[in-house]
Length: 578
Image 1: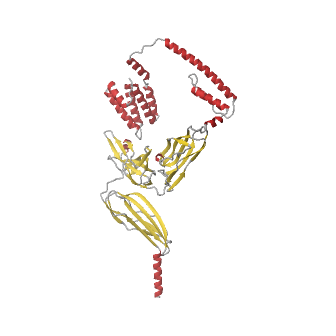
Image 2: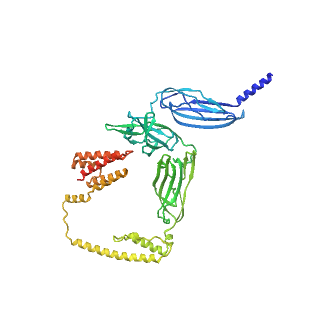
Image 3: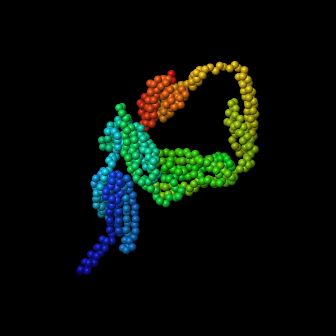
């Protein structure tokens, strides 16, 4: 009986030791300075294959921290001594503390085989933390808050930032102007939209909110990166206040090891193509246009394009770069074009190759190697091209050359240029001959008329030149601008709410009036007005220029403000042009 009991006891102990679950959490240290990041390591170790994880790891209350980065890795192996499968999951959390003193970190929970496992809570010490709030301000009534969509990104990967304004008084929203996006060496920032959203009356308790701007951030270095606050101004009748949003810290992951040696900084998903943009046949020692196109989605505006590789078969010149890129809430999409000028050095088939190109795809977390792109071009010598032409093509070339070089004011002869035809047409040949004869006769008549006109000018009495002042007045009268036409056009643009064209037209008006008085810059023109029109008109011109700049770059423009601006323009420029 006693032996049976001993056997059952050992069997029970072996079953307990066969399978085991361990969940532990360890901070990197227990005491932190104000700017330190709290790094936690959560290790889940399961021994035995009969355990089934039913829930994800549940985090404790982190209201006293900002969660700025996460990461996890899973491993599994066989213990050779016990023949037991051991699976291990390690999760790393990066926390930014919001307050100083003793802070408690609660229990982490996980459910396995209908049983809840948890860690023990523990305390950490935070010393001398800088006071930060989610909403920063320089005004008592209006607050700005910057929110980052994804705080855990790769280097050169985009993340979307949203700027909101908060206030108890909704009338303050229209006073927020002059938004300045953050600028920093380790960030590339591109605006997505400055359109204001609808007002949310209860976004933050008793305060209403409104989205002011959406912009895209590309961090170009790894590590913890602080995105500076966004600045704006709040204009009132009495004064002008500057407000600044909160800073946001993001975790920028370093790109994985094992990148191709020709990988540079392309992060996203791209395609590369190379095409011959020239319509004519390639000829030795004559340039052709070759376009290298990189299209897709990613950091297109900062990408290092693959160049055309040098070769003894051709000469390559620096390209002209053009872009067709749109920045939206889903990322930066479009294409970048590099237009190269290439001169073949030999006749025959020439292979034009690009440099090798690779990019990192954040979706698959892998490097993609696109290799080289090759364009085959068949170059001909000058003699080969001339021999391949038919008689009609040679006549057409001669006709076109004549029409291009001998152009008269009677007929715009370049419009009669003949296109290449593959078949012989007698009608085209006869038409060309008739045109040449007609042009020759017209040319003789024109030279005869020109010679007669020159003789009449020599016999006509010369008109007195007059004084310098009289000549200057006559030139000024001939160049004087009819500003009433500008006023009418500006009125139409204001009514149609085409504000961009409105400000462009005003710039044209201002430039025309300044040129009328031979003043190249606005500062010189203001000094001119002060001398000839009085200091009041000069000061009015300076104030109007400031108002124009403020309204021109305001994110939201009101019809009332543009209407007042137009009245000031009409009033001032009517005085100047008297």
